[in-house]
Image 1: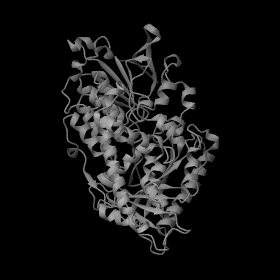
Image 2: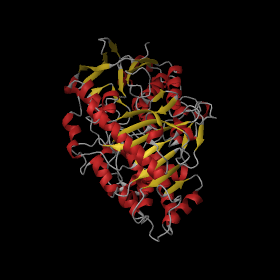
Image 3: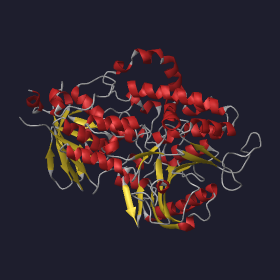
Image 4: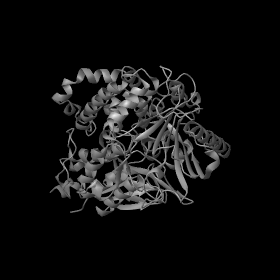
Length: 567
């Protein structure tokens, strides 16, 4: 009796998580990562004594992480040291113009820099901050947050953990009772939804910025994604001490403990497919750039879906050729500025958001006007709405794992950017990005009231869309994954099973349920659910029994050898 062989392509969080689950199920799993370290977009960089997370930096949806670790019989708190941030984040609004409807001074304005607002774990304090910008907005924010919690719970219990193999399984009585409300949330934009809640444009931004985490804008993402306000306004924002990469390290440890063979520095050149009946194929393994062929009963591609469909698969087996991608939207890319700074930066919180006044123009610059805009109509935003992470606010000099040398701070600046792989692709373009980075750092310094921020930078790395295209094989150099619009969400988003190649599965941000670390963990579980023939909308019971794949109702999905495992 031979355990089924599984090849997992890509060592980001989705690949690691899928590999660990399938190895626990009894499969012999080999994970193949072309870089020297795992993590993918969720990477880490250490330079000149500074440590930077190079990708996701918000720890949201803690219950998803808790459930994933529980599937492997573990507790997340035994692997990751989480701290709740207070404030959760600080918002800087573009200074100038007539900001206050009553002529007053915004919270946090001290005569220099930009007006600010803080979201804290204290809901009453956040409500008061909303009221300071618009009378009565605190109570409306509270009602909005309660509604977002209801939508979030509904999504978690009925939609996020479904494979959509049986869409009717998601239509529980609780969902059916809320269909009229769900219809309203699906047929108008998040921006329209926030506009019906508060009048002040700045408060609308606080309620709508989450769309960027979905690779989209509040003018394109459906109002259903108001559920994300539950994450910061109700749940709060957490941070794993030592950086987000500690989460990747923890999942890598779990995968190795389950028996996964993690191979780094290995590039997959093609997915091997054998022709079958009815014009379908069957995945038989992967071919490496070295020429080695690794045979497998099942292949999970956890790399960028566009890369899988247009580069790793022969065109006759591709479900989504380039023409399909040309009709869809990649979402936002990013300019990343990783800066080590001399001196302290108390003006910035652990998370700080900077919002321009003219949001529609900002988003039109980076996304264009249509769902699949031509790259020629996109341009870089100046000034830009942007995000700054200062992890030294938490991992400071007294921390067990300080993120910067004594007397210094680290900054991770993310500027939502057009998904144009030409940006940063050659020396002149990279020099242009370096110049833009100077401007964005100056913007942060001016708005936050920090004297000569660009001049205090002692080390810096600037990464643009070309970095995501070349290093992450990302479609059009996107930073997150396929944009979440209505036609690219839920059952309209690519699923975890290849429609044309038996034994080929997908995991990661290009598939259901979507982008972000929690969604990638769920996509790994959806692969396991499909192999088990589990069509419910519920998460799998935890912990998973070792060797659980032997009980699969679909042994053929693991190849002919899996039938012996079942017996």
